[in-house]
Length: 503
Image (cartoon, rainbow, N blue to C red; front, top):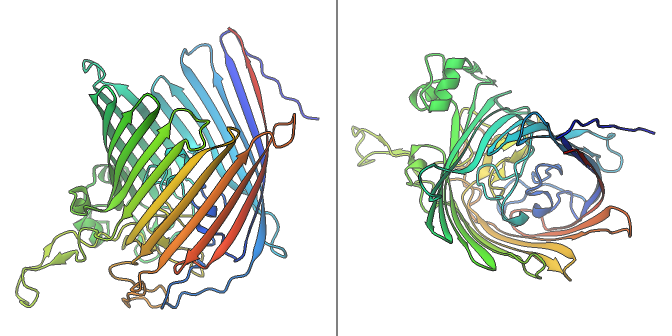
């Protein structure tokens, strides 16, 4: 028997929660359906490399199978008496995925391990921490087109300040921001790069019930060891160049000396929120950018457009309704540089900033992927994993999609989420097949369509008088991009809590 004790002084509080889960996942093909693995912070291994494209060479033979996963999470909060308003929150979360019958033994995966501390509107997280999604788990992106919760997180720190009212504005003007740095530890083309992140958001109260949010967020990948160019610049001066978006020095690659040091991307957010007596309505336009043309809105109308209705009565059969329209085909145009007259060889060519090629980069060829999965908008398809275990970027980032999410309560007791996503996929402006370096080919010319469905149920107190719950997920893929598949995920969880405090 194992016992644990907590000795608290006067004014201290302690709250410890634990959760143990057992998952079973199965599908009619080797690849679990899209929604079975999407938006779950990389908990389930991604077998989406088994995709098919009409008229393409990338066709994989698959077979049905069942996977078993076990997970354990500990989280807690501690308020020391000496610091009024300070709250410390350690979290440990891990999953132990097993292969199919006849495969290797259990493989440990640590999904979250961090310590967080907060004081008033400030918070610092140190370690591996997932970000909380928005829109009640119904969204394609969780409210962030660049970091959507579709992949595992990275170790680092994140210092953030939540919205606070600017003094003297009578609550009309509020600001929030974050500043973070991470280390990428997955298998990549450029080994071990670092990642810098910062954001700044403004909120304006236009009317008592209507708020406008405007925000800018940037992610910058830099450093690491390139198999072609060797170690990349990684001094403190180089870090300052990355933070400020400046060109690389003489030790950087020619491309980084012409443009900026490292691989930069981000998003611009425009959002309106209306709060009624019985419901709230939100509309957001989440815009990706890869360079100056995107930041200058030359890539309009690209982005994710979200319309979200949320009723304050959470016991309704329909409590949340979300519609998202995704369009990323334009990318500031099909050409990055051109001249006034292409037939005139003596004309000077001008950089216009088109062909943004979202989530890809010429130097950091793994692009905006993490542990083999797209870190942002999950409709962007990664290149299949190569023989050495790396992913060489994104092979499908020109997408038009409609997404519908509905959430509520069945019989006022059982929460559910229903999701349906229809997409047309146009690949890239210029598609290079990984097995034929240097060759350009449009193997997404047929614009394959895809329909992905999900129904998820959470049944609390599955066993009477015991803290055991059951979650059921049914998922399906039909279309031309992924192999037709039907899958189920069952989750049994047992949880507990210890709270103690003195005043």
